Amino acid sequence: MTNNAAHHTTSSKGASMSHYLVELYSPKPGWLALPAVQRSQFLDGIKAGMGGLGELGVEILMLGQTEPGIDQASGHRFLGIWRLPDARARDALLAGIKASGWYDHFEHVNAAGAGSDFSSHLAELANA
Image (tube, rainbow, N blue to C red):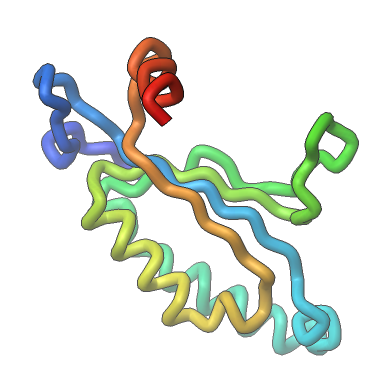
């Protein structure tokens, strides 16, 4: 997927800022009970729905299983990390996820925000 810098928002310093979405999810019992054919049909629909995301500048950074043995591990089985050019693209991605019926099949938590540098983040923490 392409990442078009023209779509990025800018900070007060004029630098380009990406937005990020982190998803944590685990299958619900209903998903685990679905026959393989129905799972495949649902996932084929998800795959087809991903087609237009590149045009919005949405980039998959990582999709996969979580590592349960790390310190302070989440109990979720899967992880997705996305880079997006702006809140509009993030909202379009989240709307598509919801419309797909994803939340019917997976316990799901989202976290999103605009990227910043380390010093800016330390200032955010100091002011929290």
